[in-house]
Amino acid sequence: MAFLDILNIPGLLGTDLHSFKRANIYDKIDLGLAGVVGIIGVVVLILNGFSTPITCVPTSCESSNTNPNCALDWTYQSGLCKGEVQSFPDASFHYLLVIFALLLVGLLTVPIYWGSNASKELFDNFYYIWAKLKNGDEECKDVEWKRRMHFVLDQLKSGNSLTTRYALYHGVALVLDLVALVVVGLFTLNFTDLGLDPLGLASTSGGKCASDGFTCAIPNRDLFKWFGVLTCFVLLVKAVINLKCLLFSLGLPGLFGRNFLIYADNLKDNSDKSIYNIQTNPIMVLLQTLLVVLKLIFIAPIQWLVAFCKFYARKTDGPKEIIKRLSATNIRAEQKETKKVEKEAKALETEASGDDDAAVKKGDAKKEKPKEIEKPKEEEKKEEPVSTPLVARPAQNWSDLFFIIDILSYNIDPCDLILFMTKINPVPGLENKKVSVDISYLDTATTTMVVSHTDAGVIEGLLDTELATEGGLQIVGWLEGPTGIMWSQKTQDNPKNLAFAVSLGSTYELVSAVYGRGRMLARLQNFTFQCPQDTKKQIKKYGNNVPLSAFISQSLFQKFSSEGVTA
Image (cartoon, rainbow, N blue to C red; front, side, top):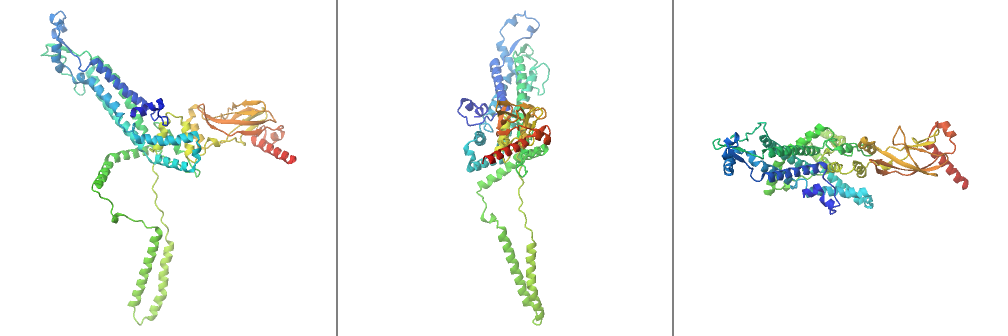
């Protein structure tokens, strides 16, 4: 059911743990607003009843209530005047709200996107890969499992079923919201004192009936007016939500929640080629979307009709219509053989048509024949091979893979999704960050060790972009030395550098990790180094800021020297 998919009731009850919360915040708001419209319709129906009440009294009661006729019960006369005095909005507004509420809520039960097994299967396939790689299962190292993973990912990259279904659902919902908004708004105008009635729905009797002998009033008009205003506001917000979701389906990189299309466009393989084919020009994206919609409306029905007619007529391709493609080697061999046969036939005709006296000419012709036969061979060698034309890679803005990732970014930290991209693509991850021994240095004036790490490449840039408003990536760590744990301080020039107050001649081990939004994203390798006892030589060579590489080379030299002496 669509309600279970949006609310994720199975997940809350613990009966469907192996699935994602597919509904984002906008889908939940859309469901909630549809429920609000339903509640408003039910409340108005209860307060008003199935029939809108009307009260009629003699016209003389308007000027004075002392007339004895004003104290009489005019219920019967009110019933007779109902059809003459009540307008169409007065008689049907409460039914209208209930009908639109049923349509809005009933749309969720149609398996267009929510409640569709095809949509749920694609999400389950993605979750299978996500869960395995996220938990670091041993099965992920198996070659055959990686092949199955790439098959599933290729299916998600090439398909656009989720985008189509999502756009169709929210497109229908948007049209229904706008129709309901316009109709409810026109009905509500009829209940106000503004005198606006574009469709002429108001009653022409002016509240009079029985030849102006009775004056009638509808006590629930104010009730209809204020509930109509509230319903219009709810429908307007609901239409905006559905419009936003429909724009999400357009696949415009960086707009309307499609941030991962921008991130995917920056991913490159080891040969510096783009891994994904993302169309970043919004005008081209809109044109391609328009062409797809026009094809779906005008061309696709004709193709479906032609396919049905062929199937119904049992017309299939016969043997004559099947074209067998021969290999290029066989085709060239047949061409050479045909040319040889034609040349031999021409030579025989020349010999037969010659005169008996032209023996010398015949001899000359025989000598020239092999030359004529050899010329085509030279021409054949000069023939350049024709390259096989390849089909251009289609844009992947509407692929199921990025649709799922962008949808999940509302419920899952986008940093985790960016790191997931490094596991399914040949891109180095954060775990490749190491201590940069050339940039890290010891400030000899204050005996402060400033530790810097290498750049992790494009992934670190994407994470910094994602965390730009929250300070970017952070390196957290400490030193474990003779005096225990030494916590780091941040440097002003680079917040990713770690500064420690160290003691000369001591050995330390750096323990560090990469953090984002207060969560550990990757654990870095430990790094051990030894500060020199005397730094006079290094100061003469490097100045006050001695690079860490000088300590490592010196400590290694001392280690190898001590091992040599011991040996």
